Image (cartoon, rainbow, N blue to C red; front, side, top):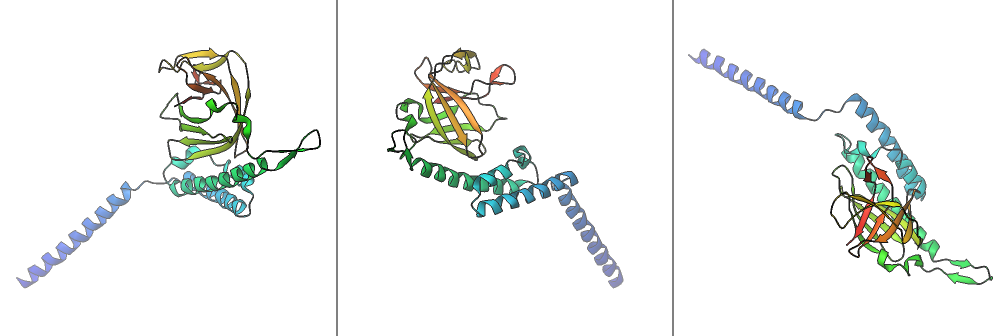
Length: 246
């Protein structure tokens, strides 16, 4: 009888061990798997971020952002890329902050004019006569596949673009009068994607921290709101970027 009890104990222990292995195996099967191709890409991106970090630490912020540009942002939302995504945007934010600070400092330097005197450019004052185009804008053509959310233009020309995934872009803008006609936009008063051609009142050139320049055309909608459009087509019958001040 005692011997039979020992056998049962051994069988119970074996059953528990097998169940434990099965449970562990099931748990492992539930873990997201990273393919060898993705792992190679992760390794490649780790090297790029390492180089960008070194450039950031040595004060080469523009070069650091340029290095980051070789990373495909869409990849960072894939399984296994989470830590890379976090570091990517932390580095970009750091680079942008220093680049904006440098741009503002350059605007504060004295500029020699044609008469041999100096003009104090304490800020980018191009918006001083166009205050109606400063402030907070909302992305009009919302699409769950697109990141744009809010655009903020300050009176000194600094620009911040906030995205739906918590990231942001930073730049410096200048504004000038413009009267171009036939520029593509939306009829924002309808709340639909009905397009229209507008006559611009102003042109706003934004130089982003990565060196790219983007142009928006500003005008006033029928309901009195300031609107910005880049005038470019998107997916054939849509407009690429339209922003409405709120």
